[in-house]
Image 1 (spheres, rainbow, N blue to C red):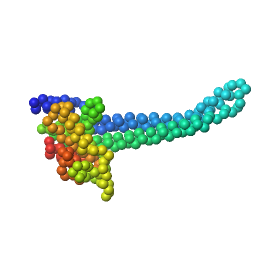
Image 2 (image 1 turned 45 degrees about the horizontal axis):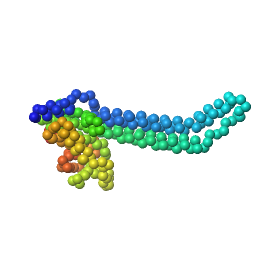
Image 3 (image 1 turned 135 degrees about the vertical axis):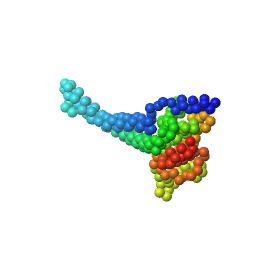
Image 4 (image 1 turned 180 degrees about the vertical axis):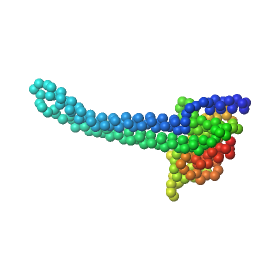
Length: 240
């Protein structure tokens, strides 16, 4: 049975050419394309009434007995194009910010990958950007130790200091404490469960690794290890 589970995990961690942060870099690129498309649409909408007015004048000039000056387009056309242009512009800025956020996340994954670059030489197998299947997303990092223990690592690129109250994670920025935008503990536990269930493994350990924050947590939180970049390799070697 153990051999069967190990083989299943080897299949899960099969040959892959994905690099750390590759999936989210691709996502960032897609978002930038959306942003540029929206901004180009905004510029076109601004110019559209003037282009139409010019074209209308040229057409009238070619007609016999036409006046030398074409009537202006209805003001409502200008207003409509202006409103639509602003909508496209704000949409473009939204997607550009989302692309920046994705690039930040990719940088975090790349930094974490560099921090554990010594593990393969010690017999570890590491998979980046593991896709779980349709509708299930992907996992930043999955590690298999020389003792066939499995670890799911969810990378976070937030700054500041990370603390916990025994139930939830918080970020300290100066003297202010802020809740994170999502329940990271629940998120990584779900990822670990999905890997465990799909591959019929006995146990998968969930880890949250912060690439750019100081973690002030000594114990596990709801069964999840929370660690900063500089201590991740040590933690995995200790556990694995």
